[in-house]
Length: 278
Image 1 (cartoon, one colour):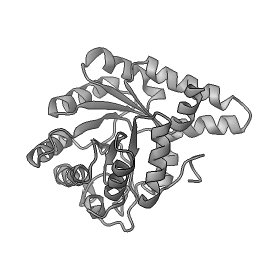
Image 2 (cartoon, one colour):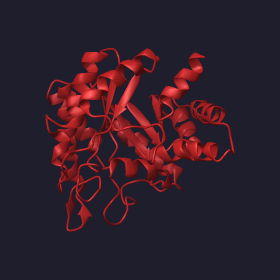
Image 3 (cartoon, rainbow, N blue to C red):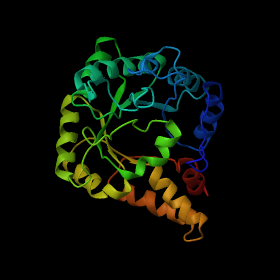
Image 4 (cartoon, helix red, strand yellow):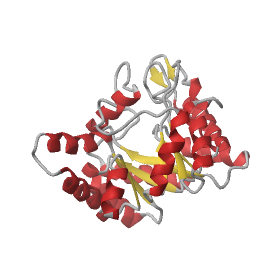
């Protein structure tokens, strides 16, 4: 992936080999994002039984059954307009989007996912997904909500990698204002009330205070996503000879854990695991 050093797109037939390497390194889980063959206004390939994520989940569970498989649930990479929801007259239709996201989550659970992770930031989507999973016998599938996902400048490299940048406008009407940490706590509380098992703060490094406040307030596992821009910022500085890559990686990831994150999601995972194993 040109925008993300050391990262690669993998077709479903290649994920088993990658899953085995990840398991050997002692990394407990993977988070999957899908790229469709075709995009349309509703992102319909996102819930296809033959979708890339659905096929990859099945192959990973066969190759490395003890590896926890988490799937990102969103429409942005699947829609031809790049927004995270269905559009009506140029605006996001929140409730219609929630119904489609529930279909995506259910399709991932049916493929064998252990955890589904809605990243869309629609209101009420956690409740709709939880009900759909429970109705269909997937009460044990965990739900990790992107609960405090900020409208950040640090998503750029990933949006290029996933071809998911909005074709018009931005996502500030449904992602959060980076200046408002009180709203973040309110959103986290709502997702827990709706049935989230794990809540996430994204990005991580610029929102350590939100991670800390969430950890102090909520009796719930806190995940933190060390996003593509944070990852590539360190790589670019190291490539310019301005800092030591390994030391900066460890310092950044340690700070996220120190702030209170129970779960760290990072593109540094394999390098970090190798470093920690010595």
